[in-house]
Length: 333
Image (cartoon, rainbow, N blue to C red; front, side, top):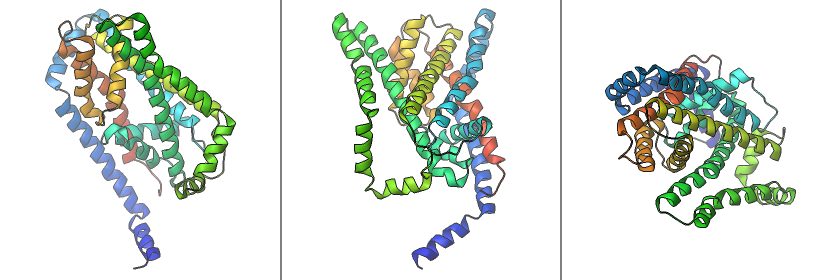
């Protein structure tokens, strides 16, 4: 069989009707995976008891409702960041963009470090825009990583500096070294001569020529758009970090705003380097929280409950909608 015949056979196998069947199977599989993760990884009985106990104090219910209310803002900011980074003139509406983001959340639950998010978004996008969707999502993830480092590094080293009683100059010097380096690098990347040099180096690679062909020669991605995407990434990071702190307060953990946010920033920075699916990372994040804040003064079960509640709010609920969107997608692609 020739290469051309093989390609034709593969394309024929993935006919529109078969692709629809595969999407339905994926949607059902994701729903089953969500159910398994909730029941197996969340210690539901302990979590339910802790929710019931915390709910008895009506003064703290506001923390839970505010954390829940911030969930749409979290994913709207992610949607805005992604739309900002699309590399062609193709511009889906806000509703279509949000649906693609929700589908990405759903698929990401089954993959390490949420790498499946890219493919999930592509499922609800036109087939001709697959490379555009994946590449823009990758750039968006890099922007989020910059924010992780810029916020998490100072927080982590300020905590360590206070614990080991470092002198003030050392604590602040180490803490702000990485953010300063990032500022310098971003400044360099905005220089036109560097962009020209970079393009002259990568244009010879076949993968770059393939990518340019796939995304076309439409609207180029400017530095102002990248900076704006980083602003969205920063706002989103603060939103879901504050959600975590609100839930820690809901479960009656005695943390100040500064102490809580420093700890949350540090936890997210450390966790970002651990390649675990979000369902499994619930326990990992809880263990990191115990290390950051100390297990002697804080109730471990309350930290686990806050972590699992955030997982339910920010990932499981959106992922359920995403799985249903994948399951019910109409069209030939």
